[in-house]
Image (cartoon, rainbow, N blue to C red):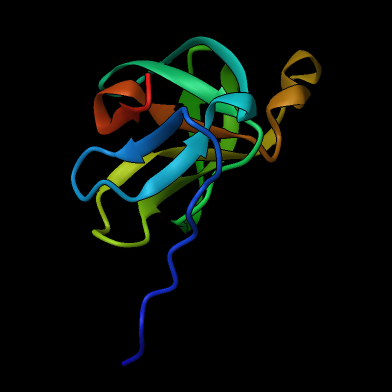
Length: 111
């Protein structure tokens, strides 16, 4: 086994895993606050840190069929949201490579 590498984010406003308080995303990485997840409201981020990707899975979401990967906290392995791998609808292509973090699974620090 080895040591876990955890990336810390700069800046006063950071989103952290609610379970273990490891940094997950910064305020300036938000693309949209107008998303829904499994547990309620969610944010779309252009990048996140300290996560592990699950396998590709085709999922029918509110905006149609997408290939997604669930994302898990790399420290405590709790489900935090998902990553958009592929969007099949042309109007949804902007989501590809971006991440959904569920607000219910995150805590804000520095707000």
